[in-house]
Amino acid sequence: MQITRWIGYGCLLPMAALAQAQPAAFPAKAVRLVVGFSPGSNSDSLARPLAQRLSETVGQQVLVDNRPGAAGNIAMEIVAKSPPDGYTLFSGPGSSITVNPHIHPKMPLDVLRDLLPVAPMGQFSALLVVHPSLPVKSVGELVALARRNPGAISFGSPGHGTGFHLATELLRVRAGFQATHVPYANASAMTSDLLAGRIEMMVFSAIVMAPHVKAGRLRALATTGRERSTVMPDLPTIAQAGVADYEYTGFQGIFGPAALPREVAERLNALILKVLALPDVREFYATQNVDPMVMNPTEFAAKVRQEHEKWGRLIRDAGLKAASAG
Image (cartoon, helix red, strand yellow):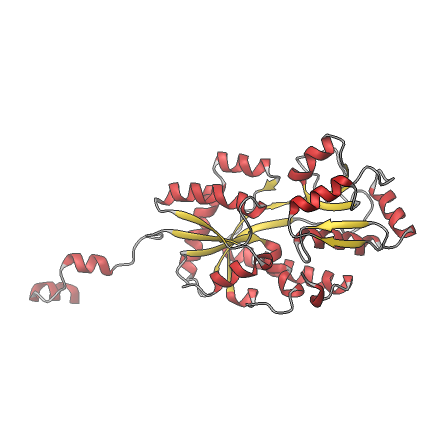
């Protein structure tokens, strides 16, 4: 063998230098998890325990870097333009990938071309809630009232084109009624206005809404998922309540630059799924109404493309205009 001959002739590099030339086990340094939303947001709260337990698992720091703005576009652009070595990753909701391209007129990147789906973090449903002053106690009554009074009922969302906005638009299109969308810059202002009755309806996080429902400050009509919510299991799904073909199940995931080597993506996928299966992490995610998703990078990429096509059709059917995006 040639290496043996090199050793015999004394021409081989020192063994220490040879060892340094070999590929190091991944990760060999700190990993940056870029979150496209502010500290305390749903995306941030799901990323932090994952980062902490990943740090402990791999023996390297996994740092959360919050880069809020443009519904995740700023953070996604940072990751898309970073070296494809697995050390800079995007952590965010599926809506950033599947909805933003259909809503924002000037995307800073092509999400399907410039990002690689690495691993899902989990999926979640939401609650359809109304202010108690609205004289409805079921989805059927809400739909009937909205049809009798086109545009009179207002609904809030944490921003134009966000997942919760699209979940409400999906309900509106499937059930055939008009309502007035009121986008908010942050979830706390939106929730305050709903509690005060300044808006009447909202689809939002079950974890955030459930305490207000239990206290009687809001009325829950249904859950948006395919299955009933573990947070409020007595509620029907919107489909069970009579709106055919309705389902909104959001998801959270990890993405890297498009040129990320397959072996690095698979290594990251295995590490992330291992951490998400830890009892304490699963328990925390369950308290956030987030259910596990187990997919390899190829399966996750197929899921992302499917959702991208689904929400593109909805946005066209709902008549949402890119120019109106906030």
